[in-house]
Length: 180
Image 1 (cartoon, rainbow, N blue to C red):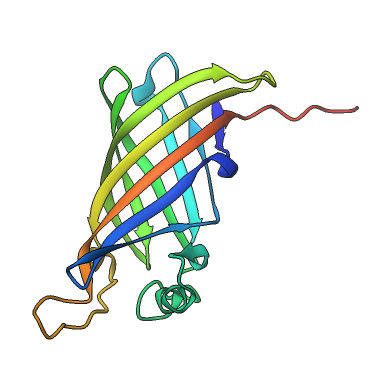
Image 2 (image 1 turned 90 degrees about the vertical axis):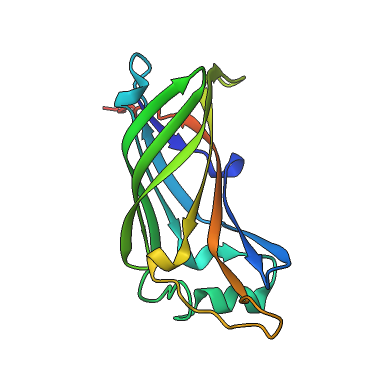
């Protein structure tokens, strides 16, 4: 069964250490995707998702513009970040490990998320809904995002490790009806 991401009830976010003392959090505001969910055998399910790199939002316009530039995401050249699952492993209960190919800044690398699958339930409108919570930590340098500056007291402006946090509400895709 095919499920689609409900962007009004979902979030694709990240957190990265700034100047070795605080954490900058942000998200991608424009994203979409589908889940091919096999209820009988969840390991046979598949997830595909994409985010528009230019939709990055950290709550600070100048920083967001810098992140869109060639120093970081280079959104003119690499407008989309994608994820395609290659393996889903049930860990017991509603816990899963999802491995897949993450493509960002023109580089594709395997990434493993851990998380949970909640549902499905039927909402007040008769639609089936489910929730996916997942997180991982990646090295931004592995994806060619290498811009940085040393700080006088030691360390760097932007840490290499970036935590990715995804909260998705998905709805079962309703087949289109024909008026013929």
